Image (cartoon, rainbow, N blue to C red; front, side):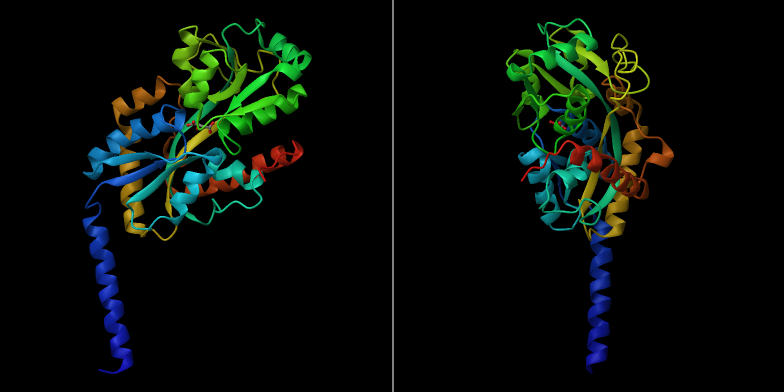
Length: 325
Ligand code: MLT
């Protein structure tokens, strides 16, 4: 058999193996990397959406909390994973947009090292403080932080996280650079805030609703144009006199680059079904999430979102003069 025939046979075999793998996918559980600690917003959103996706795919999405470096450790792990559809990641505004400007030597490029699966949930940002913080509203909060900057501690989930990035914008508006206290996620950071071990934090709404409504922490304002049905009594930043602070994060699923398209399509379809499932929607909505509708769903829309968010947050980060290394 000459070389050309051998090559053609090899290609045919490879194509057959490729499509067979895609056809039988998933044949075993799928690892869903959550690059932050359990109990935080990214973890909670992953478990809610993963519950329903597991049913559709017929295999368990097994969450692995791979923490550190503001979510970039887990994201690097996902980038390097075998592109076979058995490792995916829940990334977000921090790991797949802000980190580009925060880490000059970032080990991955969010736009080219991943196959976008789809946007899962938008998560408006809420300005939080410990329950005994001596300010009755956002104006008094900003004044107190400014006057006591030297002794104020702000919690976040590491350089590159949503809580770090969005509070960077808040701090530049208030003209302060407080001591910042990093955690492996805003799950543990929230415990510190509830325990009054830190003073304030910017966090995604899905992590804060029960703490605010239960009086365990204070929620001064939500950084979106409209109030959120899950936190009806929390004013918008515009109502509270700080309209320039507008910030809404998002969590989205990605696969490593070169994961076969038929496999990515299967995962995107399962995500789409989960976002249309009544119970899944109810669980996400009662936590204040913004569930994407048709045009915001899917692979192309997520690719566009990633590049637009990199463009949006890079100047904010550069203006704050902050970088991780
Ligand atoms: C988390 O799940 O802990 C958050 O997404 C961390 C963050 O980005 O603030």
